[in-house]
Image (cartoon, rainbow over all chains, first blue to last red; front, side, top):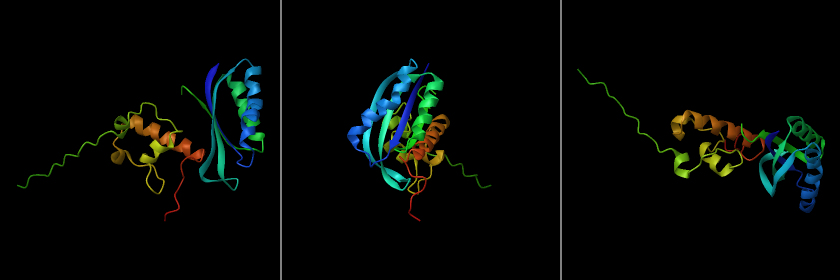
Length: 95
Length: 78
């Protein structure tokens, strides 16, 4: 088990109220594989320094979690497949 | 014989110590902005006055922050 920090930028066009439930749905894979989600911090809509996919804003969320490396990789892969996710960054908290 | 001019560089105050920062975090865009120029380039260590180790962490943090669009790769000012 390792500690991870995951930052996600979501499409600004989705409703901000649906962000938490949809993140929960993605994070279900962590709990299923015996990991834990420690904190979910939704920064909200934020102007990006440059456009990503022709969008100048994004909804930022930062997630702290403990999971197996394979689980974290899988979560990152699934996020990348989703159209509503503009970008992700998965980092180990200790390194 | 002319004496060679020995210039003593003035020691700069470490801006991290001033701001009481222990962990350099890529999410702290406001802090990292102090270490990039107005063109968006990472400032050299002789300008910032931080240690080698800190400069490396800052550089990595800036690069991570750029990937997440928290900091610009380059500013439009030309």
